Length: 117
Image 1 (tube, rainbow, N blue to C red):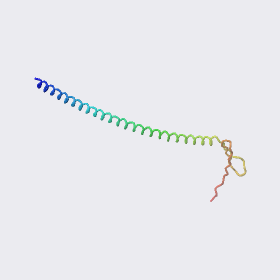
Image 2 (image 1 turned 90 degrees about the vertical axis):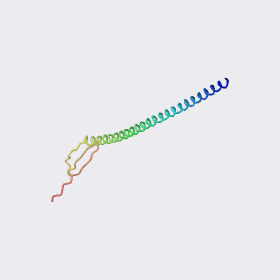
Image 3 (image 1 turned 45 degrees about the horizontal axis):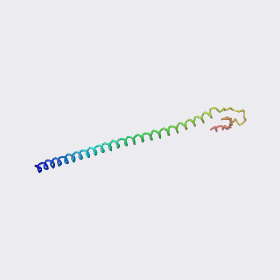
Image 4 (image 1 turned 120 degrees about the vertical axis):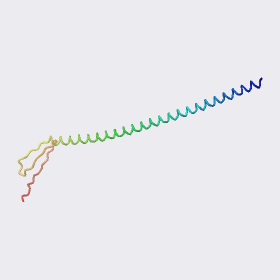
């Protein structure tokens, strides 16, 4: 009878070991699947982040270009304003020079007559 009990116990222990091994293998497979899923999601997030950063850099560069263009336009406008705020007067000089005052500075422009053909 003790041999029968031992055989039953041995069989039970063997089946239990097999069930534990199967459970361990199942857990290992699930862990690998989960790790694979996590790695895939991390790759997707990294790709989106890289695309976002590239778009951000592109937009920042575009903003810098537009700021430079606007600065140049403002400088040109200030120059044009300075010229337009100047005054021009035809003096009764014998040489017929045109005097222009821009920002308080006087300029003399001489006129040359065209040669008649």
